[in-house]
Length: 220
Image (cartoon, rainbow, N blue to C red; front, side, top):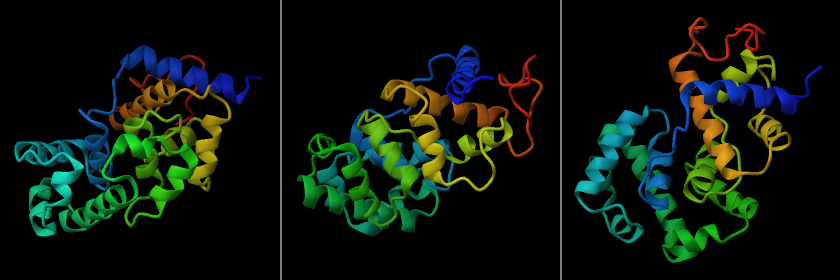
């Protein structure tokens, strides 16, 4: 019988063969990635891009400039991302953390040990595990696996987990069975997101899905 590591590798290979290198997460700087990770909560990426474009248009995508912005103005600029008043508060909370703890430097922040920094990020109001790990992986190139709803859905349908697994359990499934490599984790998570968005939906499109093949990898 195949090991979990072998099955995870098979899952990766099929998606990678189908999609190729996805070069995710889009963002010009680590700070932009962090902002995007907060804005993408409860919305799609297209809405986040519109909000980020508005911030770029005002030359506000630096910690210092955004920190000096009034919360009401920030909320108005990020309106396309949805829940803009809540997200403005979350951005302000992250900015306060970054400015007071690391003098506004993402580079200084990422020099902290990964799991210690993760715990610090989780203490920031509005930052949960998925957001913290997205900042660490995509912004800081830290070898930590991001788990989202697509990941959970695909693993459940593929028979890796049941419906009651915690975020940490799913994260360890990947990190205990794959090499510790931020590039691998980056591409793997991006592949899961794209497979989930295009094929493994709430109502799955199994026939064209890269995980639906002759050995019946996916049990959807």
